[in-house]
Length: 88
Image (cartoon, rainbow, N blue to C red):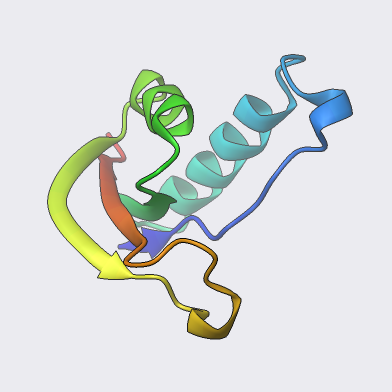
């Protein structure tokens, strides 16, 4: 299993397919390395991003993990949702 790390595309460059290209390239590389699944963490307060990753084939696992930088937390109780995708 491999993890897609946190990344972002500049707001000025969004909706141009760059993010999708980055994710698909990472997934292709993972598959070529012999990985069978990819996981990632998505902030639970970003439903539009969650929807976007679901369009790329990721599914919610039902797992939530605490925000990893509590000193930077601006929303109390914020968690990441864990998403998973089979690399068929």
